[in-house]
Amino acid sequence: MALEVFADLSVSPSEIKASRPIDLVHLAKQCLGDENLELEILRLFDKTMVTYFDRLKQAASFDDLAINLHALKGASAGVGAWAVADIAKVLERELQEGRPVSVERIDDLGVAVEEVRAFISRMLVNDQNH
Image 1 (cartoon, rainbow, N blue to C red):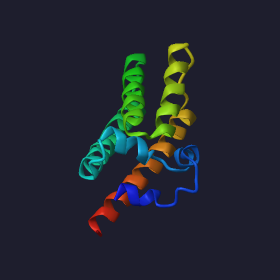
Image 2 (image 1 turned 90 degrees about the horizontal axis):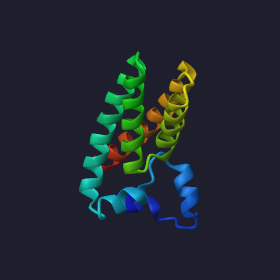
Image 3 (image 1 turned 60 degrees about the horizontal axis):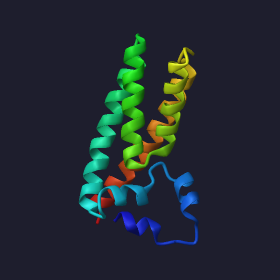
Image 4 (image 1 turned 30 degrees about the vertical axis):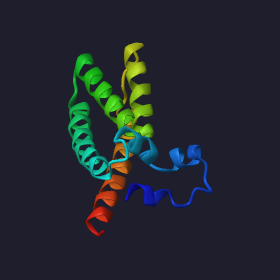
């Protein structure tokens, strides 16, 4: 199913990476082309994002912020959710440099998380329809 999304190869890989909330080529490589594993990883990743983003919003200490940002960054990079990984990386760096993490920046991360979650939801629905 994931490979069907790339039927139009007239766009470059960098354009694909920039236009999709999840880099499906990266995910396919991580899962060695096993489409069932890709879908299971996406289900787990969706739950992981919800858990760690909720914890991030409730974090009150430096350590809590750092742990949750790091978890979001790592999990996102693993599946190719580059926008989430990049935003989390910037927030993590700002935190380490002693800058406060603003509510607005967390909201920006939340927007990226929701885009990825909506994309995952569409993929899972499409899989059920096939």
